[in-house]
Image (cartoon, rainbow, N blue to C red; front, top):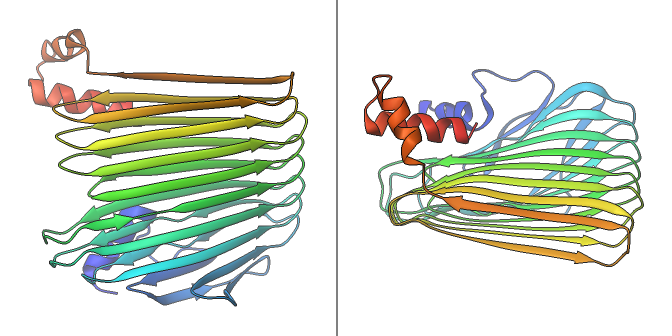
Length: 305
């Protein structure tokens, strides 16, 4: 891999060297490194482009890294990755995609991830998106996530996109059985003419299952964001969605709540707050010696942590 690709790996997966445990590193449409472990097997998906990752029941304290980097202008790919998480397994999955586009053609990666969690399984899933390059071609990322959760399984998902992605449409669908728990934390910043759409559809199908979907975002310049979150309470369950956003310059943000209670014991809540940075926050930091721009950046960095 060249230095640009290595830099992208550091940005999206915090990788400075070959990771321990199971991994598959993809660059410009091809696998450039792969390793399985005794408990985690990574295979080429039988149908089409992508991977099949199988985690044995009872696996603990192991990780899977599956980052993707693109440095070829004009490359467009769709990759399907299926994760089968065995009963009572507990693993960390680090994904993400970085695009450096210095050409005049668009570069695009659409990653479709499906997770099948057995009873009592637990995953922590981290997906980071990053873009760079001074070309006129766009950096486009369209992640699709499907999560199928059996009894008492847990999925913690961290979705991060802070810099450089021109166009993204993120779609996440989850179906929860009894006692299952889904936690999503999305962090997003757009600038320039960038566009970011986030759509969540969560079916709460089993007794005692729960979902907590929270998005924090900042829209700068002339960028546009849409957060569309729908919870369907089909059983005695609890669900919460929240959109907390800062708007700057000529940015635009649309929050669309969707709560559908189909059971008398479904407890569903949506919260949304969109606004500019309070003037008194800026003034307080400026009294400590910061410029107005430095104070604004400090507030935004803290907000998106």
